[in-house]
Length: 114
Length: 113
Image 1 (cartoon, rainbow over the protein chains, first blue to last red):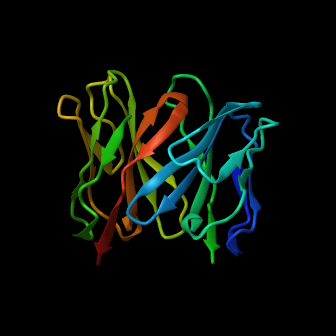
Image 2 (cartoon, rainbow over the protein chains, first blue to last red):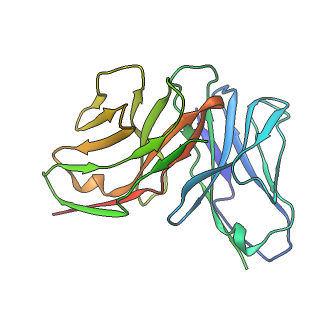
């Protein structure tokens, strides 16, 4: 299994540009999430999904869009990049239910918006 | 909403010694899960240990153990026999519905030789 994969690993954007961060998992996990990591703030939830076709907002959703058309993929779209979106982005996945299912994280994408 | 607080931005410890990282949280739920994650310079998030709130026994994984005080809403991580490879950022996290995680701000741990 490849686990959780994210592309690209690094990206530089200009203000106003749009782009999509890709996330895929091959573990048949129902739950997938996107987090951003900023210095001194830990990881914060942007959007999450509990299954194909179902998404919801997390703590910091503004400026981001998601969709989940398949179990495997959960792309994150930046509609019009802003310097405040400079961050490291992590995708995570896990099985659903109420057990202590471990979240598996991707390697992260470092995004810089100039 | 749940909150997680890590009050130690940075800590250091000598190799082979023991160190304790602090974490407090706030929740109105009675049954929940808590985690400690390690993030080395590679940036990869690695699960260190988990605790189920309904279990009174503190979780242990090799050199890592927790002191879980449910009434005080405290969840500290003890690392025994510290090794250079333990140098990393450590995050405390609370699991919400939908397996969403609420993270603390993190503690940078440096192990010195």
